[in-house]
Length: 156
Image 1 (cartoon, helix red, strand yellow):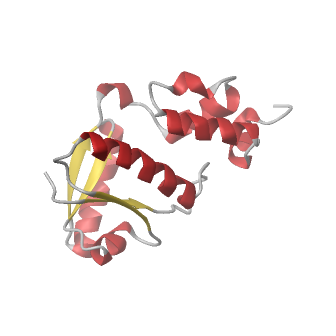
Image 2 (spheres, helix red, strand yellow):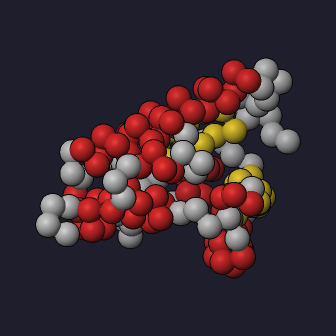
């Protein structure tokens, strides 16, 4: 579908993230390398961090289209609004890919809640690759601030 794919990792100042941009980039590079090795005819994938607006980063990186994942109708409404805004700001079009049924209601909030309040993040194995499960376990062991605020800290 594309001759190359750039996975941009940005920072949304309105969100509290469990993983830093650098941690997310490292995990995504590992995961995309694993996927690309299994698809020899696939497009090359690069993972890169960026600051600021996604459309500005996309233009700087030479992108001609934004590819966005959509889990459900709630996502579609938000993503359609973003797509129209992005087109007005940059002229870039947006293509949407629907998530598989098993991921339709998975969210980072849900993953953080299960990690913070559950006894073992490995129950998320159907939603997260092993690399991410291991990283979640490490964050839980270190009692990360985001997990404490979610309700998983001592005394909660």
